Image (cartoon, rainbow, N blue to C red; front, top):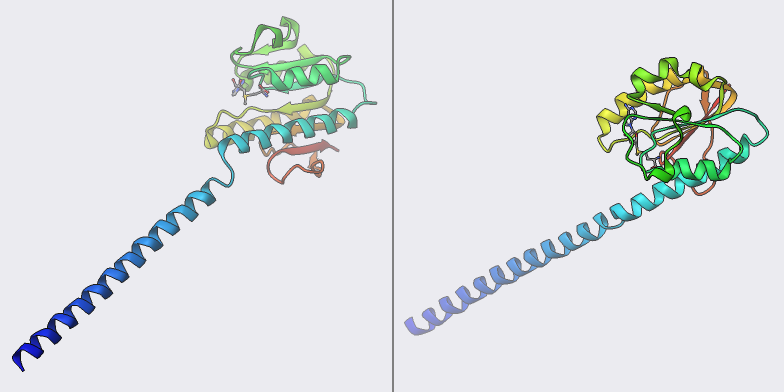
Length: 206
Ligand SMILES: C[S@@+](CC[C@H](N)C(=O)[O-])C[C@H]1O[C@@H](n2cnc3c(N)ncnc32)[C@H](O)[C@@H]1O
């Protein structure tokens, strides 16, 4: 009888151990699956893909804007030369236009640096006030790409640039921007097909 009880106790113990074992395996497995799903979700848009989409949006918006203002005379403004990629694209698409570039520090390849007359060198916050004297006419297109990767700093600069840019724009001018702007007198216009909302912004001066 004693022996039978001992056997039952051992059997019970084993069954509890098995349960604990299976529960812990299931939990462990669940965590692994959860982690792998989370990892896959995180990877849905990699930084590379995000950069590619941004550049595609930038090009689509600039091409759309260049076609839109093609019959309107006037210079173009490039705010933020960076590597000179978009400057190069603009001058390629609008070879007949004067393009004035705002940049605080030249880092572009020498091939993509405008001549002195078309370069407004220095912090845009101090340079933009007198820019109309240098430019000499109201612009029909401004491309604003002044982000530095830090959201707060970029938003602060964009909040300054929007109102400061307004007097430089001709009626009907377009502002294509990587940052949301408030430009007095301008209203937001729909993005070209294929450009996701908030990836780029386009405004038109009324
Ligand atoms: C994202 S990059 C522009 C990239 C450029 N569109 C291209 O395609 O290569 C932003 C540029 O804005 C410039 N920038 C940022 N803050 C500025 C400021 N306060 N005044 C003048 N330039 C500024 C930076 O020096 C940088 O070159």
